[in-house]
Image (cartoon, rainbow, N blue to C red; front, side, top):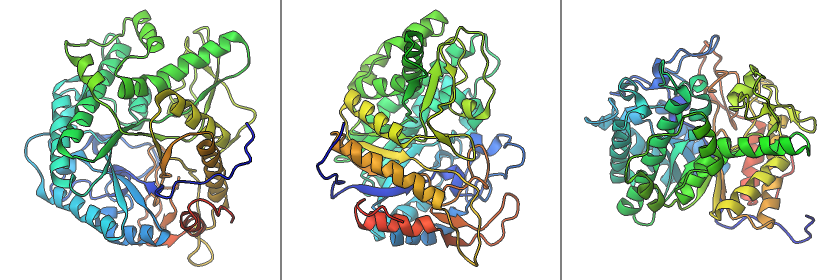
Length: 471
């Protein structure tokens, strides 16, 4: 489609960036915070523990001031469940409650809208000990946690996100440290029982938000990436449809419409893995309605027909949940370049994904993650030159503008990440931020904040409401 009309972002567009509590805060077991599954997991060999991260717990005021200097309209961050409820339920940690009051107040001081993720990979360890999401008690615990958040922060926070990347927790939970599935007879059924409980918890919390926080808006935040067929061979198209349903539409179909995607349900039936659904569950999910869709986008996927005999052990495939023999076989896209970490760069696929999501669900969209991880280096005194990040983000923003012209209702853009933090897989050395944190994997140095070249570029982008994308 070729357009000649001018493309513009809405005047109230929410420009910002994202982080998550366990990756940026540090202070993981102080001031009353209980351990989460991230604190007790074995970190990948050669990567740092999570006890310091970027130390935003102590440096939040400095960080928010830098975000304000960039011109942020919103800051997407998560609230650590076990910092509020050290055991996941029961006794409240008042120091944790006060920390997030301080963080939110600091944002509001600069006119930055807090965009709060309620659960970002950090289930309290005490809940993991009773089976995590496989235990229905965790649904009640999440509702309890949400009730506290709405009570404490509902007068200050207009925008809420329920669960970050639920699809990735289902597809690659063991890799990102969220899986609590033990040695069970049918692991696939156990996974999708957990998934069902998360979907039910999300529905209850969306309904609760609308009841307890009038005027607030809430939505899901999965990782959505359009899946291409490798060729026009009909079998490849079926493979792409299969993986699109399993990877993407299952989660959004349920969040928006309250029903299970039929392709996924058929696949689960074939594997004797359908979740046990109790009376009333589906009524609850059909009654809950999100106000918008948040989703994380990094790259598309390309697949071909699988006869069930292939295996995939590449790290990139595992991270994207693409090791699925019998469903599809992952193949490299020859038309897309790759990052240093093996992730395909596909800005046009970003536009295609936006178009597909909007055409299916007709809800406003905010991008909650999108970015480039790289080995940034501090040089020339106090400078970080990251033209590759500017190039990546510019191309994705251009495609987002085209999607707006296509008719997609965009409400915001929050790339990953506002500041360097600990990557889920590769530690500190895989840097995403606009702000450099002066530390190495095991040498904390001085944790000094340094504005990267992309910091100044993004400041200009925001000031021009997306019109000035030049270097």
